[in-house]
Length: 119
Image (cartoon, rainbow, N blue to C red):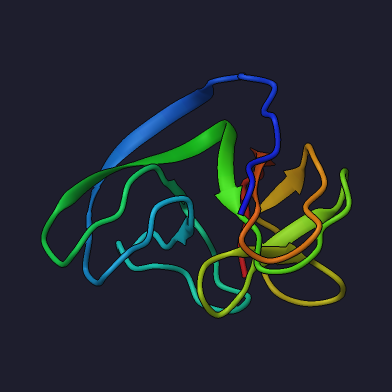
């Protein structure tokens, strides 16, 4: 899918995290080192893909690029879907980010502003 043009704002804080499961790049990641599931509390977004035991960079504060799991409007509050992709938060789940650009469907990559969150 095509990428949305990011504003090129860098993340403010990136941490190293050891993967406890298979993680796809640009997906939400839990503090435990797993790809986030539906409504999960996310530490941040993985910059690269990983398998169990690999150390990866995870953006935890500021702007980053995340894969959309559905259509998203610019400015929407986001949460994780069952695959760690961003979807619009409606009434439940941990609020993980704010969309800085729109996505017309699943598979698009958009810039987001990460939020501190808790499920």
